[in-house]
Length: 294
Ligand SMILES: Nc1ncnc2c1ncn2[C@@H]1O[C@H](COP(=O)(O)OP(=O)(O)OP(=O)(O)O)[C@@H](O)[C@H]1O
Ligand SMILES: O=P(O)(O)OC[C@H]1O[C@H](OP(=O)(O)OP(=O)(O)O)[C@H](O)[C@@H]1O
Ligand SMILES: [Mg+2]
Image 1 (cartoon, rainbow, N blue to C red):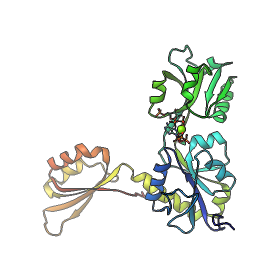
Image 2 (image 1 turned 120 degrees about the horizontal axis):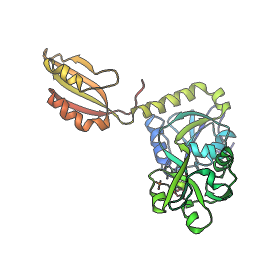
Image 3 (image 1 turned 30 degrees about the vertical axis):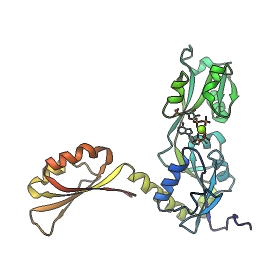
Image 4 (image 1 turned 180 degrees about the horizontal axis):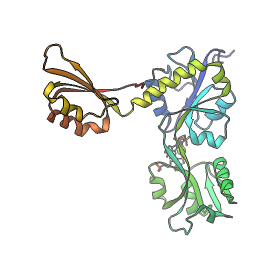
């Protein structure tokens, strides 16, 4: 057995080795408590803080088939990669990151406003599998022009009348004077498994899902602690939405004082702290939340 061969009882999790979704995925996995031993060197196979789980670093587009054919038990990659490969895998969890839309776009001055107008025309794309299914579903016969990247140049170069490509900020489309005609797919990063892995390791997979979910739930939330005199309590509580209302505790050193704790959205904090102070709160502490399980 070579050094990278997987002993039977170890679960292999494939994650991206490069590209814009790689680091956010590694960060989420590490924040869940599963530390990756060689995440810097990006060795092919890396041990983790859980002796029963190892990580396989791979290209995002290869991860769906690695999971489907058993080279890995689990994987984290983009939904668009899974759809493009048409892999037989099960989605276990949406990591709610790596958001990208796969869109059909045409030159801004084109008279095409409906995909049906592309019948008999050419469409350049890196996503031939998804595009074929999309146009078949619409009953439209187009010529797909496969490209390996920089798809947005195709109409300008005269090799296609439209493109199907990813967009997130919209800068590439705008820069290349391209206009969206239809949305083909909304992609996020997802945790996937093959059926065999789900049957052999139900508890470990459930444990990993819960750990990852706790990181996702905690995103954008923070923990507030403050002291409030009893007469100000009602006014302070009115300012605190919280998950299930704030927690109020007696302060042993002072009968007139209570401690108030609450989970609040980080983006409410800027205006909230001033309102709480005005309502009578003091000694206000803001603490980041790493994980949250409802
Ligand atoms: N512009 C983008 N915005 C958001 N997500 C993107 C974008 N481009 C690619 N992705 C996502 O990154 C994942 C991997 O795609 P890909 O391998 O092309 O990565 P990349 O970051 O674009 O790297 P590369 O530089 O090799 O193109 C896919 O799931 C895809 O949805
Ligand atoms: O909406 P935006 O934020 O502008 O991103 C969209 C661009 O990102 C991807 O290209 P990438 O930069 O990954 O190059 P690639 O085509 O070689 O993958 C995609 O193919 C688009 O061209
Ligand atoms: Mg890319």
